Length: 110
Image (cartoon, rainbow, N blue to C red; front, side, top):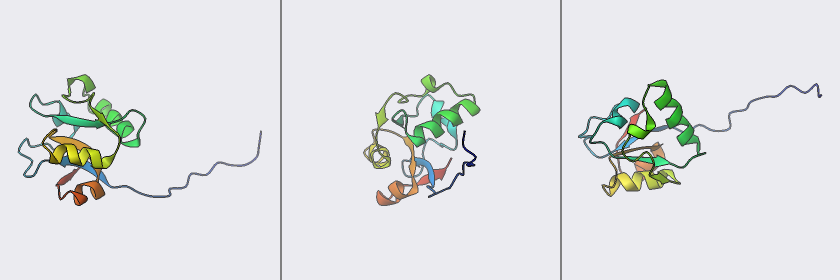
């Protein structure tokens, strides 16, 4: 065993939130809203940091992931999340503020 103490260093910070359609007509405000019957969600792929965040938040809020329409629909980038919402293929996804800003979409803190 080594006498070296591990150190955690935060190298960067990402601001993330819910990317929603303009005017947020479905009133999405939190992770519990993702399970509403008329909400179409787009998810990140398993193993991504955002997916870990989503799954942890769902568990903490008592939301069964399989009650969410689109939970199984996975994409690989923040920009794909924003694009799916922009094209009307989803109502909400979790991604970075940078992706939302690039596509001129609203983003809500999650």
